[in-house]
Amino acid sequence: MPPAGSPESSSLTAARIMDAAEGLFAEHGFDGSSMRMLTAAAGVNLAAVNYHFGSKAELIRRIFQRRLADLNGERMARLEALEASVEPGAALPPEQILEAFFAPAVRLASDQAGGGAIFMRLLGQAYTAPVEGLGEFIAAAYEQVLQRYLEASCRALPGLPRDEVAWRLHFVAGAATYVISGADALALLKHPEERDPARLLRRMEVFFLGGLQAPWPAA
Image (tube, rainbow, N blue to C red; front, side, top):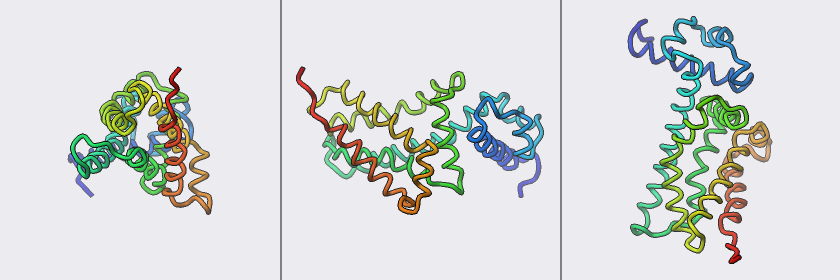
């Protein structure tokens, strides 16, 4: 164990606080989780929470920052690998784009041991019971990766106007967030026939692919 006061010890304390906060926020909501509950769950005093985060709002932001950085990093890596496998500027199959975007989220939602499943529940709460400023922070975190996926999707769907592709991706992302982050999704993943996240991912791809590729009405 790193000595008390060392950078390693400080980092571990901050991570322990965030881990405890994730569980509390997912179970009791952002407003229903008090600092007293947090310090008890994390095994720290209030001074430690204030030292590492300053405020509850900053703690929430940091929780989302660490998870979304990894999630979107994997999404970008998957898309870059796909684009490197074809000629520069060539279109990718839409189903590959969908899989590259949603596979990391499905994997995270099925991660019970590492807290990924808890975070995905928390992500769903961020849209239904938003914290001030959190929506803007999440949107900024997604901005670069969504822009890259929009460009790839426009090349894959040349018969659709750019604005229409953007709207369809928005619909797809919203529906997928509900499926992956909601309690119903966790129940599906625990169901004997749906323990394999790949099955859920495949169901999502088939459904969303139909929406992305739907004909564009002339009127």
